[in-house]
Image (cartoon, rainbow, N blue to C red; front, side, top):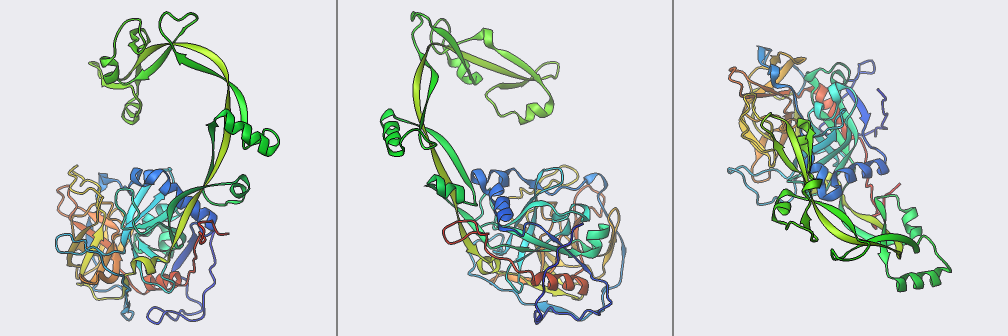
Length: 499
């Protein structure tokens, strides 16, 4: 895998800097996501285009329920003898949102990405305090495909709800994870810190000249629109002839006429079954054309994904069919001159600043004793293994409890030292933070884990435990390196894409 070397400053974070022996093997791996502004803008625009259609299309990260993992053994009270440490959170003005007397932190959101099969996926994540206020923490499997290559078009959307990004979109620039996850798909290192660019939002569009259009590096489009003959004549006079700004062309047009009109032709228009059933019969315009009705036999997947006007039906033999209905019109065809011009438009984006300045950042804790009280947040969505689906994934849910007093091994995954919590949240909550000392008024705490694996411990096909990598000195090393990653804005004050 291609590695990215990031220059590190000499001074470190006061609470998260560690002395690493010169001959020690590094615990971290670093990979680029979209460090260039043009690539970052493209990733964000992919998700924001068409009023967030891609965001709404995405589904939670999915893992196979056929073999639900179990906790199979215990380790010592703490797998690490390093000194405990904490980095304090930063907060912003809280909103009034409340869920069952637990205030949702502004830092919580979803990460969106394309997996290696091109599917639109999401996980849970949170903003976390860092040197440059630009860091997101989530599960490693929400950034890396089987611990190897990073996912494409990776973005973080704090406060996400139904295709909306209330505090902007933050595109991943650099990903940091455990060396063993990156190299061996070892879930003891199932976490990732991602340095993100400044957030931005789309702020509409504006019409520009062809010269401005050619220079624009961000989102842009050209559209041919029809104009009047007078507008065409004025444009030709202005430019001394036809140009890309205006031109004329011959076109064949069809006008609806009566059934007695000479040299008429019959034209057809597909409509829904409901419109067809209400339409007249006979030799009139807009009449039913039963001879044009077509029944297509399709596959189940084609049937389920079809969005057209045709009428879907499963026949008595179990075949999947789509029936197309048409209305007929009498038309005359004529040739006339039509006039056009090209309208050039560019998309305007607004820089929202650093993630931590907009929504704040949770604190970070490592080498903490087991048995901590934690509040875990996540956008739980998937059904339980038995098919029951209590969560929608639309808003964050939470679990509150005390982590197991010992670390656990897990079957079916490469896990030796996970901390556990009794909780029924299902996938979609992957990557959600485990917050120690959560302050319900300030809505901040200390990230001491992220949801990694879901377990059915009593064998009833229901998730009853979740687990996280234990945050030890190695995790703190990775966090420390990620904290040095510098990012910047990707759009300028006029909404232009920066180089």
